[in-house]
Amino acid sequence: MRFHTYTKFSPEAADAVDLESLLEQLSDFLLQSGFAGGQHYHPYWGETGEDGDRSLDALKQAVLQALIDSGQFTPEMLQALRGEDDEEAQASLAKLLDDIVKRLMEQGYLNLEAPPEVPDSHSAVEGPGGLARAASRDVNFHLTDKGIDFLGYKSLRNILGSLGKSSFGSHDTPFLATGIEADAASKPYEFGDTLNLDVNETLKNALARTGSLDSPLDIDYPDLMVRQAEYRSSCATVIMLDCSHSMILYGEDRFTPAKKVALALTHLIRTQFPGDTIRVVLFHDSAEEIPIATLAQAQVGPYHTNTAEGLKLARRILMAQKKDMRQIVMITDGKPSALTMPNGAIYKNSMGLDAYVIQETIREVADCRRAGISINTFMLARDRALVEFVKHVSSICRGKAYFTNTMTLGQYILMDFLRKKTRKVS
Image (cartoon, rainbow, N blue to C red):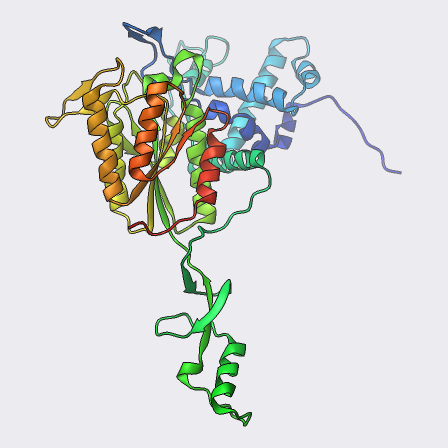
């Protein structure tokens, strides 16, 4: 007979924590946007902004809360671990959290950045006021490429799960080409075609021409028939993310969901459409391209919305890529309110729709249209004047306008990407 011995919860059980489930619970914390520069005073908005806490101490607190929320670390376990809330129990809890963070680092999801401090002869290392606890507040953590890719996969799975059963595949087009998959009727072989031979049709042509079944068969060049497959088109995508002040204004964080969508779309393209490319552009007072690896740390700031500069940069990036289709996915929540002047100065006007700013923005939209670039706008606001502006942009560039919110943003973007019938635009 087999016997089992049950013991009280031990911090050594940290090895049994499901790291993937834990990371999924931590996604909001790891991708938090915050406000670049911390607290900021604005004459109209007042004292706003808060820097995202990326310290090791904050990470441990988030891990503890995530374990409780996910059910991996129940209140009963926590009570058993803490015991009578003495120093030994607190040390055990600290060791548990240290071990979990260490496992996240060993698995390649996180890394830490901070120079080690050498304590003075009179400085305590342990204890509430020691250097060890102070260091946990000073050390910053960062997501690795593996961690970002994992969060992109989880975001993609969650978004597609809300859409129902979805299948992935290459972009469909009305063009046909020879290939391995037989998706259409056969055609006479032409020089340059993949020799995916349709044996039945080839033999039928040979027999019709010769009228003989003698062996060897007399097969001539005009008899050759090849199977056709659907033409697979490649696509270059630039995601334009608005990181102006309004993206976290009024108590709603709109920027973090936008980052999650960008990560999900990146994972989708990398795994299902390897011939496609995706780049990320942040636009605010100006615009700049950022690597996907730094997207998780991107923050909004006390900025206006220079849509024209973002479109100009996105167009320059797309024109450098030789793809059948080029598109811009623009995620914003406000009207254009800034413009880069010829001398490099930034003209700003956040009061209403400035005619000059709108005119120059429309000019950039028209330049994208002439370059064969479509612009799909995902608007997180419903102001009447802004709706008309977005519709005008869509009509110029043959794009689409979606008026959505943070809950449905990912669904709209992925549905548009997966269902799009790409074609060569003249």
